[in-house]
View 1 (cartoon, helix red, strand yellow):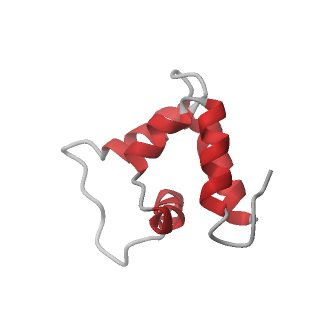
View 2: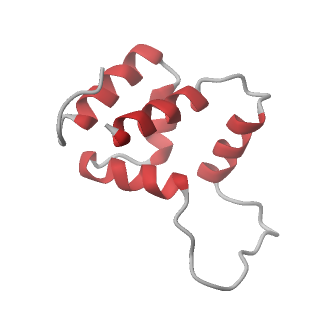
Length: 92
C-alpha cells in the first residue's frame, strides 16, 4: 500500500504545473544535479527518489521513463496498478 501511494504521489508531482517548486525539484533530481554541485562527505542518504527507483526495479523501468509516462494520467494509473500487482495487489 505504501509503495502504491508513493507512486501515486510521484505521478501527482510529475503532472503538476511546471512552475511549482516541488515539480522543479523532482525534475532536477531526475535529470541530475547542476555541474558545480558536490555532495558533502559522509554516508549516502536514502532519498525519496531512490526509494521510488527501488520500487520500480521489479518492473524494470527507469525514472526517466516513468516521468514521461506520468504526463498521461490514464496511462499512469494503469502503470501504477500494473506495477503494484507484483506485490500484494492493486491500490485503486
